[in-house]
Length: 246
Length: 225
Image (cartoon, rainbow over all chains, first blue to last red; front, side, top):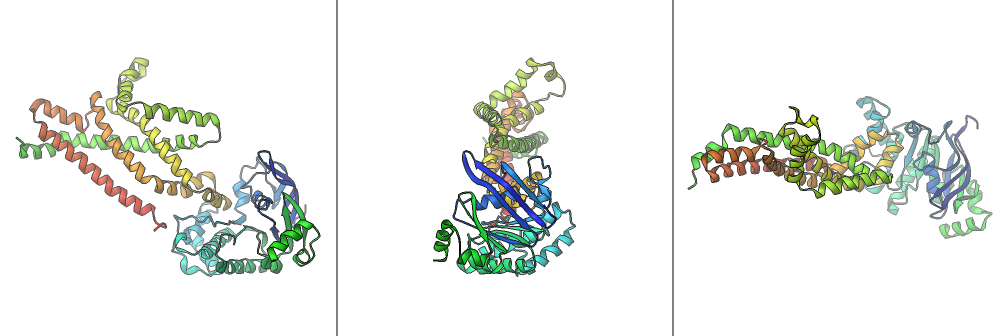
């Protein structure tokens, strides 16, 4: 593994009870790369991305993030996580804290930054996602799209080297999808290393360095978006894309 | 008939006032300890380890099933029979009442807190963990405030029940509100005035608690309005 590798997934398998969700997955994400993972529901794509910051534990194989292997012996998994931002399908904003507090809480408690500095950083990223005026509102007072943009800002406040997106637009009303995707596109343009589980094929076409198609806990095929979308080699990929693109 | 002057005298008498302070003090001590230990027991009840769950269930079964009066008498009269330690000077009626009522209160609060913590979505813990927050940080800053918001009405109910249950400690001659009233009645035979005065104290305390509950709920529900 070279220094250009952000995430190295090697031979990773995972079971829920007797059901195998991940079957010997190999995937390398280089720094600055943007990987889009797609596939039918139950294909294991969310489980895979959640293994990358150890919200889920894998049982076989190895996952190395920024040179640190994720194992149960790793005492300070929180240190790895603080360097890997994650955006969830259901936002997971803290409803009892304001937008600003959502963005400063980890900076203050994990990074130990003084309040003033944390607020400056938070406001910088809230401006970046175009909602600085909502800083004093609570998440419940925002639309879904606004909440997801706050969630992106909250993750960026930790200055992560990698961003994971787990179906960030799936819970949004159609008219709010664009504002979130635009934010992600601008992030990609800045060279952020990204792994996105999404069905937004236009987004994939525009920003992905590589698209990975998963089904049944396996990576079926992977390629540049232009090639995978226009000439998929596997029957399952064709069927899935056929349904998605109509 | 009803002697208004004596009633007012009773209300403003030093023993009754001290008795009320003792009632409040005891209730606060029991509640504080039970909240902390109830959280522990509640998390044991939700633990993946079977032995921990089993232990928690056994505890709740025992102390929710035992009448408060029985536990009080058991602690006050029974424990000294078990060991020399409980015959020493520090084992006062106050401490015995505190111990007995805490044992019971923990069982009730554990149930309330367990369900309140379970009601805070798993996504909250994951969201905080993904930011690199440590387990106790997640507990203190993220899940506990949200669980308390859910639990406050039920907790306040328990606190009010507890406040009134402290009157049972009169059987172990703790000088709380009821005991003091009984003493006064024993010498004066003025039932109406002294019971009336004690009732006023209980009602005032519970009224203050109700106002406090509104205030706490208001603060904790920021972001949900």
